[in-house]
Length: 221
Image (cartoon, rainbow, N blue to C red; front, side):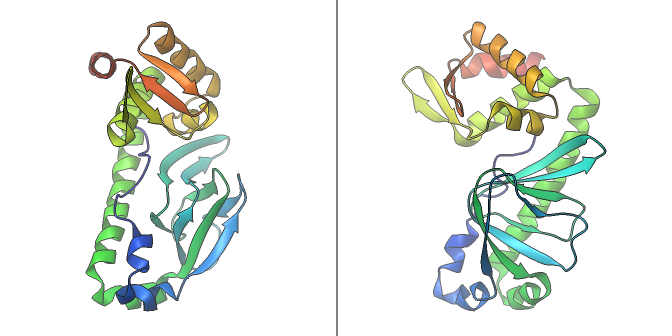
């Protein structure tokens, strides 16, 4: 399975709006990033963390001319710059930036936030292992089917003709998540469309006409 669409369903933004976390929230400052802007790199000085307030960020590793996406960060997700990964704004995004050390000192008595961070780190580790597994043992078609099944289960909405999935991703961005080229993803999606398994409702939304068939294809691939 490729990178998850969202790391955790616990929304830190909601927690920060509550009175008991007001003091922690004061330690963060808003920063806006334009689409395709690099938010952090492995070479940045300092040790900061950020919470996505709006938009969507991609966390990835880069080596020579290849990139491996580890996760997508959506509103409420948290991430630290103290890693070997890059973070890029997939669309115009606003993040809340804070100092890691100061944050650590303040959350000693905030187990709910600590739990969220543990979950995020756990999901990143799980995604990393899954990506390695997929690249080593699965072809691009299998990885795409994994991604579609996961996305449908995660954010699918009932539709008169099946299940609609608003991915909010272009073909190129799906390719980055799956670890292949845009041309390959276009070909594979067109094959699924011709087989009437799915349909494109618009550039960023798919209609899964037969989720059972999609799952069957995935299990047999």
